[in-house]
Length: 221
Image (cartoon, rainbow, N blue to C red; front, side):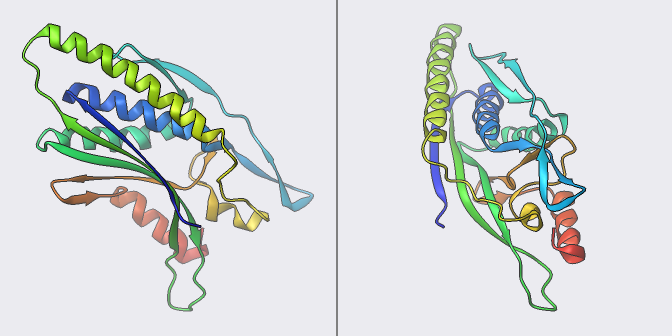
């Protein structure tokens, strides 16, 4: 299927960037994450699904509180990419960061162990940095951004409420072609975060990439 794409645009100061991206991405991940899948002992093609916990987080520079999944592993993976993007953004005027969901397609060639990643949904945030001269302007911007962020969160929820667009599992063997299996407590759809800075694209960390390549080579996970 063709990937569904969505673009959100924000003009803000650099200090707002981590909170804007975190709010948008964590809101999306709430709707793209399931509880941990555990195979049933007596039925290899069946499994039980655990629960997912949530917690509220208050923004420091915006008047907004958003909900995120209560998983330290997920928080660490997402936040390290957001922090790297935010730091790199300071040297550029306008750039984008994307949250992409994909499925893995097995390749049956004997000497080709790498999987093919096929995107099915891509969410992109475009940032234009601003420089304000006084606190009055900053307060006005804070209020406008808080309202805009709430509007975008409501838009995400409306999109998620539309007919289901997500890939479906036919049997247990397909689990790792659709869901992330690296997390201990949750099972999000396979995803990656990448961003462009000055014409270059940064994707998932080298460690994560090598880990997945080895996994593909050994068992195609």
